[in-house]
Amino acid sequence: MVVRATAQRLRERRTRAADHRFGVRLLSAAAVTALSAVPFALVLVLVEGQWRPLRTVDEGAARRLHATALEHPAWTSTLRFLSDWVWDPATLRCAVALLTVWLLYRRAWRLAAWSAVTEVAGGLTGLLVKTVVERVRPSLADPVAHAPGFSFPSGHSMTATTSLAVLLLALLPLVPRGGRALCWCVAGLSVLGVGFTRVALGVHWFSDVVGGWLLGLAVVASTAWAFEVWRTDSGRRHSEMAEGLEPELTEATPEG
Image (cartoon, rainbow, N blue to C red):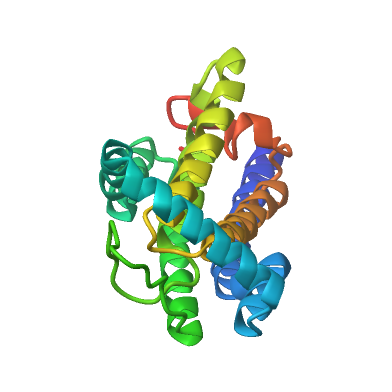
């Protein structure tokens, strides 16, 4: 009996220590995301240096897609609907907020913390980079859409990357194994679609969209790494990306 009680106390102590390390790592990962995003940093350097090949790609894509938008009003209206309603950052952030509340209801405390911190870190990091870079949005004759603020990185693209990754990695354990590949495809196509709408509507350069994708991936990778380290420290098995961050979510009270 004494041995069992001692073992229980040791397990609880180890869990508390793991929780503390998880919190520190989670916040630290969010703080250093921009510094660890090497691919994004490369794109940022090219944008700031006005690298001619990249400018050529940006201007060519903007010119061709803008011409298409002017010639096909119905197509443009569809893009506006997708960009301003379905894939709007406010819509996606509300979805993550609802997910976080549901995770709290399920007593999945750490997964709820991960989803909230990832979403907030993504928004703040994107806003910070926009303010520092101060890149001007495309200026096109007869524009079909308008957007406020600076251009790099694309907030729509970054929010879609972080939000859909959070939804996917959190809810994947609840999806039957045969349907998980479809979920990955839908999320991936949605992220690509968001970027396309922003360039096609003439409110972002192509490199803005790429920067948003890369920075969003950096945020998710950093916070997901912190979550996985917590799992290891607390004695849980390593989770595969294909099964989500917290496979135990299918249980009634996974962290109870």
